[in-house]
Image (cartoon, rainbow, N blue to C red; front, side, top):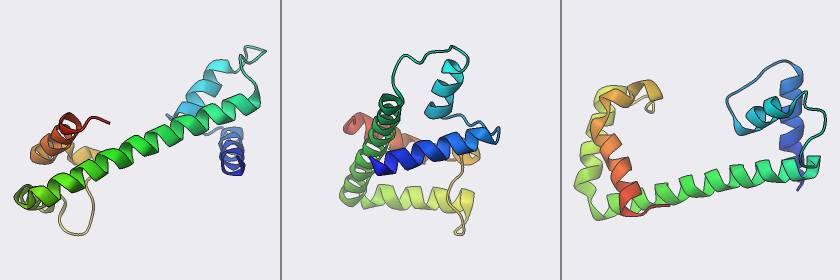
Length: 119
């Protein structure tokens, strides 16, 4: 509970400076601001955020493990993907969202991992 209380405090402190992000916490708080009474308690809201973040982390980790298994089984696919990443990004940085269009093979690998073992 202490971790999520701290996360909530950081969310509130950031919002107090006027900074808003495209995240679940900000979207919900923006929607509820000015409505007077919240439909849930502060505690319930904090726990709802905790469940959302935890769920996102678990599904991401599960998908990454699926891809690791697939690469272990098919090292040739991993080598081809590595060549594509090196061609687009070099060896000094990881791919960015702006690189997405130039990484069609990697895109297919990720989609195949989701198809192969849905989270």
